[in-house]
Length: 160
Ligand SMILES: Nc1nc2c(ncn2[C@@H]2O[C@H](COP(=O)(O)OP(=O)(O)OP(=O)(O)O)[C@@H](O)[C@H]2O)c(=O)[nH]1
Ligand SMILES: [Mg+2]
Image 1 (cartoon, rainbow, N blue to C red):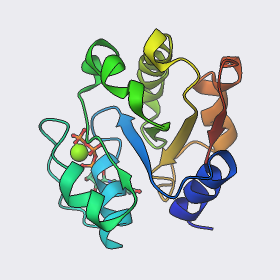
Image 2 (image 1 turned 60 degrees about the vertical axis):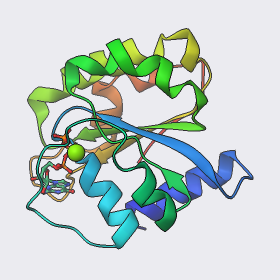
Image 3 (image 1 turned 45 degrees about the horizontal axis):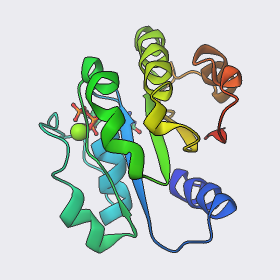
């Protein structure tokens, strides 16, 4: 099953809604834009440029799929600025580069900083392990362990 099918199945298991607002968050270079492009167009391009700003996808992707994506923030900005903005979303999709093992501890710390925001209380979390086509990518269980997902008990949490 593809990543997108797994994602949809997870969303359907939680919500009856046909349309919902999603936020796509992750460290720089995690693959957020690639994922949104793949969902919106079915395509993948290696020639990606870093995203500047965070809202630029909203209109273009809204028309092509039911979900909005929030683009991206730099790593240090995730926990500082995004919390209040995300309070209206149905679910948080947290993208992690599973092949960049050095960045996983940073990703863990940013994720946990984000989830303590009172405005995000209870919002379901889906962690997307990206770049699993690369040989150095962590397994799903290793990612779950290294991100400390089992310690998150105040919301629905899943990883694919
Ligand atoms: N091997 C591999 N590379 C990927 C995958 N997804 C994305 N990439 C590559 O990772 C790099 C970063 O991808 P982006 O989609 O721009 O990442 P981003 O999270 O949007 O990055 P910022 O906008 O800078 O925060 C690009 O070179 C992509 O081609 C994947 O599943 N596998
Ligand atoms: Mg991007």
